[in-house]
Image 1 (spheres, helix red, strand yellow):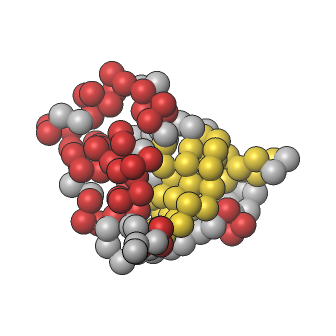
Image 2 (image 1 turned 60 degrees about the vertical axis):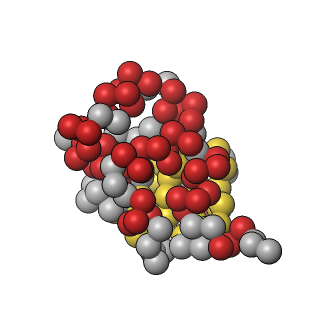
Length: 139
């Protein structure tokens, strides 16, 4: 019988964040995110993607693969960072290369402009924190 810890980040996203999983597939990042890691992924909800649906439709086109890859890797940090590891004012360097700013106020964690709505979803190769917005790297 499989337990939750045998599911990698992509397997978990496929069941709980379908738009993210589809985007990861379109960007060709499945193998990367199924790799050994560990990774910390800030995973936008399907509702977060729906809020920018026209952008998502455009980004999923093959000619926009590099832009989609840049956006998705902006949601990934190398290493496993549980919520307890995050500190107010911390800068996290993303796989994309830019920094994400962590803000913690009254027990609420914000990554960039997004609120963490569900933290510490453990995967076999890292941890997922669900966020309520799609983060956009600065060009």
